[in-house]
Image (cartoon, rainbow, N blue to C red):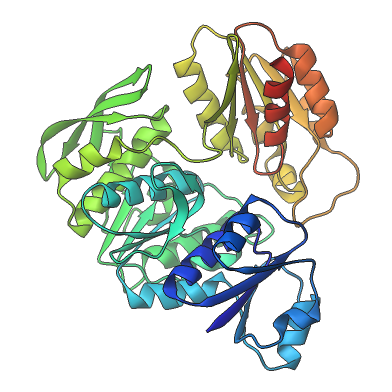
Length: 443
């Protein structure tokens, strides 16, 4: 089977390419430019082309594209004219979840971390899991693998892709309206998650019982509920922030209380860990082994990821691009660095998200001492002008500025940073480069 992948350099498509290669498929792909992912795949024998051309579909069996690719794309048109099947992630996830037991992690926030925690637990508990995760995970050495055991899948809701999966175990981290270009209303967003949570294939459903969204939408469904509140069956008590992460005592209906050490910071990661532990146990992993295994999880790329320390200035990057994610990340930073000045640079991701949640963005940065808002990373969207000044105008923050493009943001941060600062770059676009340039300049 020869699969050609359009946009193979992206994090999602490059991970899928890895799995297809490990399954024994012949894989080729193209993208607008080379990057680390295309180099890695080329080293694995994948034929990489730079640019898009109708000739790329010659002698292929199927074309794999992202849901965001326009239907008049030259390679889609050529494939359709040649009667070559055009697939999206929906088709592969449907196929894979029919082949082997699948644990699907979905929700608005925390999917990558929870999926990665689960995969690490399986790996260090004697399993050979397959996994597909939206970021590189050092403890796994990759973002994807086919493996031989259960398949752990980060099932994101964009383009309703998660509804294609038929999982044995479903995990829902939380529900906050997002992807307003796909779900024009909160009701449509909620309905999609209710559909996922009601799938006949589910043998167990694991939910964050602390989350108001899951409580509102899924309260009537039988589920394993996890969280910090006392009504949850799986609960964390005696939670402490430590220099190395988080420490808590796990209360569950299946064992005596047990101490859990995490190497990542934040109450939101305690909630993620509870979901992963409960899901692993539901699959059959020994709980003591799972608790020992989760200590091996050291984080994932772009999830409170250290980018460098120069003198006593620390720089981190996080993928947070929704107001709730920003609040959680800044709360974790404040708990870990209670005495330091926190400098937050945020690059908004998509015009539609900024417009829909403008008021929430304006109140999301209260834990930061210095706030710098960059120009919007449009991704699949275009907008008229730069609306970021609207965020700053309504923030009522004593030290907030709109700072423009990446170069302007870098220059501003270089001017702002003081000894002892903790700098956070936030967003799902390319704003990470601002922090990387800052580290290099400070050196």
